[in-house]
Image 1 (cartoon, rainbow, N blue to C red):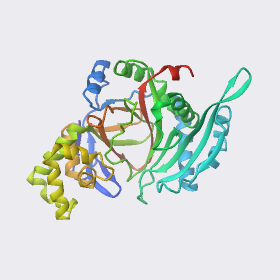
Image 2 (cartoon, rainbow, N blue to C red; image 1 turned 180 degrees about the vertical axis):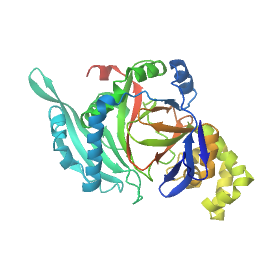
Image 3 (cartoon, rainbow, N blue to C red; image 1 turned 90 degrees about the vertical axis):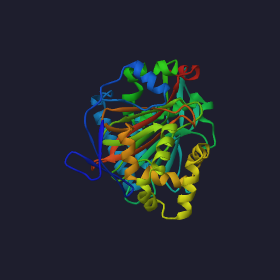
Image 4 (tube, helix red, strand yellow; image 1 turned 30 degrees about the vertical axis):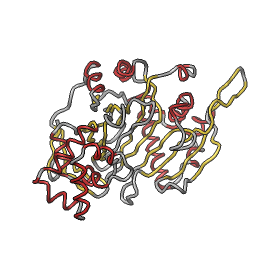
Length: 376
């Protein structure tokens, strides 16, 4: 249970993202660990599930500190390849992941640098290339100068053009590249409790793919979005340091909340403040009168009319918290988010709590396959 207030208090932390003040939150009590049956029920109902304190972070504290140094070096240098060529990354990568190229991605304004690797394995005494064009891409999380949030994304091939689910072997090797740079990934990937929770809903052992390592900074975080991608079942998010606040709910519940909020006459002043243009407000009212049109609009790249409410309204944030869709994650906590399809997926947003950046892991999950098992 979370309490939302208009202003910060002694026990309530401010919700501030990209300059927008969304009130403050405090945890009223800490939830218990759900059992596997509850996780399965929530997953099948397209509901986010918190697993409090499920990560044993004690073995990874040195790696978490080293990753903080990588984040700080990235902020200072606005590049990562020179850092990855130094110790300890040189030693971690040399055995299997030679660095072959880098690009500053001038077409992507949020990108810092993309670093390419091949994956090599020993085959009867000979080194063989088993996967090409793996990459780690460092990016800003927003365009806001006062938001120092970073992410390190791991994948392969042509970004946004290649069907990554069609090549599970390279997905696995991209995951292993993430392991080499961020060994603390094992807090999720080698966690038997998480695997046991996911196996029943996936009908098999989980594979953790298309990985992102986040450093959410004060005034930063992610706006409301989903992570649907073909071949993936959902997302596992683990907080390794710092703390974050989340709104996470299925798309249909989010649509219900948007319709109710806009139709409530008590919110008219706030909606006018968020959307001062009369034609924009008229268009919004048309959208909420047609559920199918609203759903389709939310899937467009530019959905400013609902983004203004979802991401910039303290009143809407408070309403979702009252309905039980708010989560506070501390180091060691995990949030599971089903991503079945565009109509049912869990939409979610993130806000950094406190004055320090925190590290987090966000891994897509799918059922393990024969191709990935062959590489174990």
